Image (cartoon, rainbow, N blue to C red; front, side, top):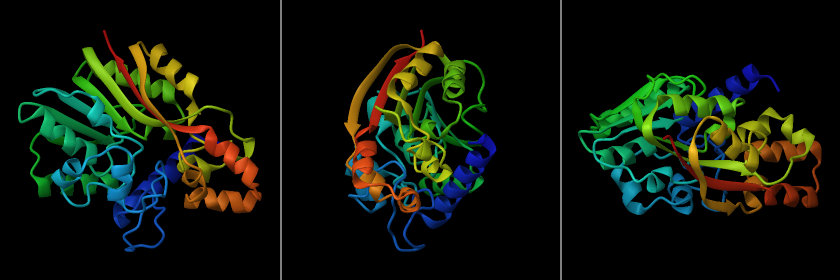
Length: 284
């Protein structure tokens, strides 16, 4: 699978998500008000329902501008990050700004939140939301998470929500995260990982990659990449096995299943190996 092809497809899908208000451009029809999160099961079809399913409170969702929550995540990293007033937070793959705005209220006016995203359409949407919600302590920057547009040792906390799995160079992502963190800084990510190998047909599918399945690493490899970057105290704070409709209802995966004529037995085996994890780590 070529990096250029994956990057182009991921950017295109998230551009569609920004324009349509759906998840990864996978929504059933533009304007339908439905979304199918790339990293969330379809048991909750609205962005609000998905977010509640994965750990956001009504207070979180009510506090941000309308349109900031696209239902794209697989957890709530802010809830686990123990943010303090005055801290600087960096969000890897910030989308329309949902987690950034929640973090902004926790770090206060003396703190700062920086969102990094590689999709110009998402940045436009995030900046519009920033102005609507009046967040002077939030800034959005164009960039790739493998090459962060941030100075060495410049942030206190890094968060990310179902984004690192889309990178073809996860070790590089965590090395960059380590570089920009101050000594004593913290990392908190929600992401999709695997407990078993996937069929080679799925690993070769760009569509499955964008659907967060083919791009996911083995859990052990994911944690090892964080440790290899220099992080300490790497811990899985929470782990959730996804229900089978996570895969069977994702439009990208549906197309692949139909084309490959995958059996229900194969599908169940794949679904049981896909989990959402929340991982914390620190830089000494």
